[in-house]
Image 1 (cartoon, one colour):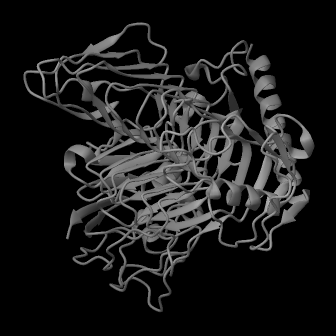
Image 2 (cartoon, rainbow, N blue to C red):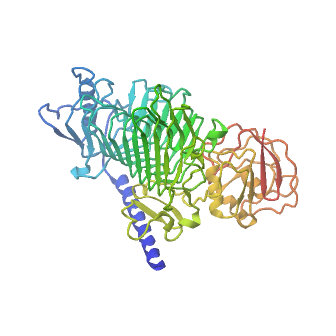
Length: 604
């Protein structure tokens, strides 16, 4: 049996490598039709037809022109090109020229299906490269921002955005659709096989998402969607931010979706997948993985959902099945929110005597770090009738909670790296159901969704974060995988008032993952200088610490006693890229003492 699993894992690894190599090669070698930034070709359009093929960038720009010229009877009109299909058959390079979204009007949205079919092959995605909307000096101001601005029906399928950049002050901003809203028909949209690495910077006031900013059509489906970009907000009054969508305002399904990259949000509600789930809504997550880094000052923040509201009309129902949180996230809003969870806040308020009903179900869900399923609950006193149904990991017994403070103690199965080496039995990925679940094994690393194999970052793919509990005050690093986990966790946690001890058995690995001042501290050498450390390389110094010779880069120096240090480098913000191969700065802390291999952090 062990040999069989070894063979299975080896085969999965080979297929993953071939798949990734094929994707990279096809992307590099593929022919792109380049846009000059001005030409709009509309000659292909005929109002009496329902199917169109677009094989040039100018024709795609022509679609945007036609959609934005459309004027319906009123705001309840289904929108431009309802029931029509537009197929992109060639890869397109927008050349970094300013792109005007398709259907930018809030009242008269684009209502067609936009589908990629590379060379006319159904299911083969096309790539749209270098879409640019707004600049740092001149952020885009129009209301709805994305490849499509506002969409009222239809959907988008089989399109990969690469090298996209969005900088805006608009109300809605996302890679593909700013506002997915119901028009006259209320027809739901399907967003499937979409990928984006877009950098999104917004100072807008409402919604932002990696795929769709505001999902407001009942029955919207997100399937096989991958977001690996970065979202940065610059407006503390911004309401909702999510790696897939800022707001799921009606019933929504997420199937086989993956989010990585970084979210740095100064806003109200932020989630790795969804910023806010509106009341009286049913939302399902099936085979979904959060693999990113989330740092927020939000009042409600979670690895999957920032805030979930219940209501007085119908139950709000959240269902998670075969989902995996392999990322790291934190909110600095308050101590209660600092231990960020799968759902930041479950809340319900009613103007009537009808109870708020909230049901959350977790089946076979896993996490790399010990965080609760929900950080806190907030319901109108005397009107709450909450029920949480939780099935954790592979356990058969159900755990339920109906008290306001009881849900925080319910957690998914925490997976250590040792658990996922070999057969991956703890993730129920047997020989029979492995491929059907949509996951791919990576030898010595945690698994990832198969659709994300070509884009998943492997830098932290064998990080062991199972030792990390945000409520603990001291930690011991005993393996190389835990050291890698520390590197990742340091991207968002500063370990103020915590003690970190590195065992001698792994001290020789420190220089592999850390450089500069922090590497010296992990080895047990106190920094002598008080200058601000470099954020991308070890700081230059001309004098070794007084207690010992200058440390070598690959071997820990012998230290018998550490000096008392009363001042840390004056750094107020962690570097953008900390961890592997870079230095780590510490915000608002002082290194009081280094005891052997232990580092003790205190507030400044």
